[in-house]
Image 1 (cartoon, protein in one colour):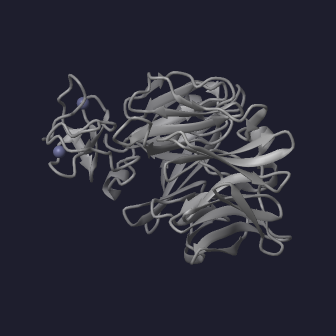
Image 2 (cartoon, protein in one colour):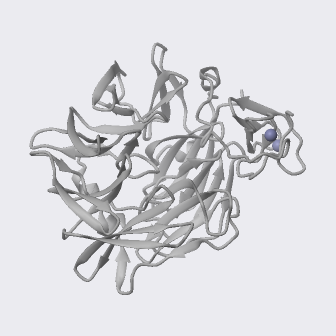
Length: 439
Ligand SMILES: [Zn+2]
Ligand SMILES: [Zn+2]
């Protein structure tokens, strides 16, 4: 079945593995692994064979290299009139953007559509959020859920039913969640094995609150510290950290582990001199067996790689030169761009170092076995793509976005999207969209 699953369309779907984009309505679609029928990204059951369906590709990121080579010269420009601290997250073929006034937006880059959803309300949009499949109370199948925190609540919104009210979790009476990048530093909600984790301050006391979403059972784990960032999910364990210690959280018990000698992990934006923190996610990056946490020693910046080995936590400092932007690919490799080159790490090992001359890259991806670096200069009307073993290609930015501040790149719904902030007007969000299917 090659026809579009969206109501009243019936157009032909362009495929890239299990993910597709309709050429008529430009909505994303996912292929059923059993019968091959196209389904809407958040369908629960296949419309071809009736089997349980879950969209396999979170972001249509597995596009073929030949598709990437079709970048057009004239990208489209989209704008969202609200203030943004946190970049959009790519999921299900769409971008999801949460503003500091708590308004929530769904962007379909391929359609050029910006859709306001039910606002989450004041206090949201000041710390990174997560989109994951979660079991909700009274539901048999996991649902795609956006999980965001404010000081006054954690909100869990089922993206398959975005008009329904979100499930809310409140802090203990008199307490507040750490969820404000400005006031609390790098603290944000985490999701692990059906539980939502968030740090809570009440009076002078810090605790990690964990909430099992399906059952509503909540646990509170006191932390013996006056400040904390996190939570970090490392293997099967959840941790918080501060300038001197890592704090392991297990049920209602916590234990301290000193940080590696001389290593200080970044705990707020002011720590990260020279770092460009990644878009749309927490500042730490999660690999299959560990976490990369930006950090410094007395004379070097780099990453503290934390990994669980036989249930004990190992710490390795990866020293780097220069200022950086960084991202992780779908296999959890760390890709660091800076100093006119890319360094690629697997676990604690540097597996590649690739020169990317003439401009320092500020975005990187690993797609179909090749590494790509992207770069953009403000005001120069230039977006440059590097592909290794390939010549750099240039593409002009849309006129109205040329004086905005480039923040980084995302891939969603068959598009390469450059995220820009309007620093003259309240950090409004702009998106420069190159359609990867269209030429
Ligand atoms: Zn369609
Ligand atoms: Zn099917």
